Image 1: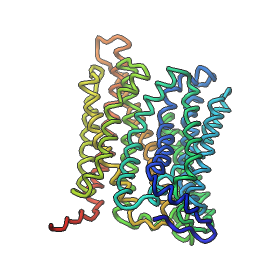
Image 2: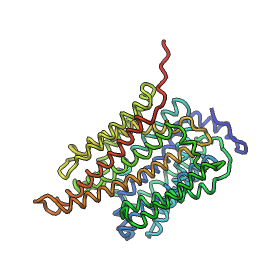
Image 3: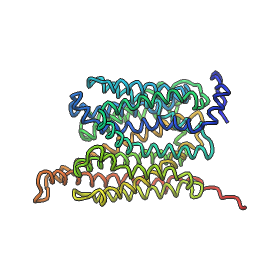
Length: 492
C-alpha cells in the first residue's frame, strides 16, 4: 500500500499510485541506476586519469584532485544530504541531486581546462551527496516484507560489484572513444532517472522540521576536514603539517557535532541511531569493510598493470571474477537469511574476506594471476557479497520513517570515511615497506625487477594491515551483532 502524504504534501494521483504498484521493478531500476552511477564514479574515472592529464596538462599533484575534489564534496555533505531528504522530501532531494550530478557530468565532459574539470567534479560530489542517501531510504519506504529483502539484495550486489565493473567500463570507454566518455556516460542515465523517478518512485511521507544549522555546519566541516586529512596522509604522510592540522580540526569539529546533536531538538544525525547494539555494530563494520575493499582495488590495480604489464582494460577485466561473485552471492543472500539468519552469514562472509586478505600477504613479484591473484579475489568477492546485504538490513531495521534518510546518510558517510582512512593507513604501511625494500634489494635483479620487488613488498605488507581491518570486522560480527534468529517454520 502507498504511504499517505504528510500534511501540506499533495497526494499522488490515483493513476500514478496504480502505475507504481503495477511496475515495482521500474522503481527499483531507477534507485539502482542512481546508486550505480555514484559507485561507478569511484573507479571509472581512475582509468581515464592518464588521458585527462595529457589532454588538460595536469600536474601530478593536480591530477589527484580529479578524484579528491569529488571525494571531499561527497564525503563532507552526506550527513546533510541524508537529513535534507527526511525534512524536504526524499524523492524531491533525490531528483535535485541527480539533476546536479548530471549537469556537472555534462560540463565536466566538455571541460577544456584544469579548473573547469575540477569544479565540475566537485559539483558532481555535491549532487551525489544529496542523491545517494535517498537511494537506500527510498528503497526502504517503497518496498515492504520479502520484496524489500530482495530489493536490498540487488542494491547490495550493485553496490559491491559496481566498483569492479567501473574499472572495466572505464577502460572500454577510454579505449574506444576518449576520457570525456567516462563523464558523458552519466548524462543519458541521469536524464532517464529524472524522467522516470516522478512516475514510478513513491513519495514517502515528509517529516517537516527545522534544519539543525550548527549540526549541519560542524558535521560538514568536520567530515571535509577528516576526509582531507586522510587524503593528505595518503600522499604526504601522517607527519605532514596540513595532515595533522586537518585531523585535529576534524576531531574538534566532530566532537562539537556530537555534543550539539545530543541536545538538539531536531538533530541532523539523531544519536539514537547508535543506541541500538546491532545497528551500532553494523555501522562499525560499514567502516571496516570498505577500508579493506578499497585497498584491494588500489593495490591490485597497481600490481596487475605495473608488475604483470596488463593494459587498463585488461586489468579491469581481471576484476570480473570478484565482481561476479559479489553480485551472485549478494543476490543469493535473501534465500539464505530465512534459513540461517543474518549472523551466521555475516560471520561466514567475514571469514572468507579475512582469508582472502591473508592470502594476499603472500604475493610477490613472481606471483601469477592464476596462482596469486584470482584466488584471493574469489574469496573476497564471495565474502563481501554475503556481508553487505545483512548489514544494510540490520541498519535499516526498526529505523523510524522520519530517520530513514539520516540512517542512510550515516551509513554512506561511514563507508566513505572508512575507504579514505583505510587507504591512507595502508598507503603509509605500503610506502614504508617499499622504502625499506629499496634499501636492501635482492642481489642479481635488474632495475625493472628491483622496482617490481619493491612494489610487491609494499603491497604484501599493506595486506597485513588490511587483514587487521578484516579480522576486526569479523570480531564485531561474532561478539557485537546479535540479531534475532530466524523464526521457526510452523509445523505442517
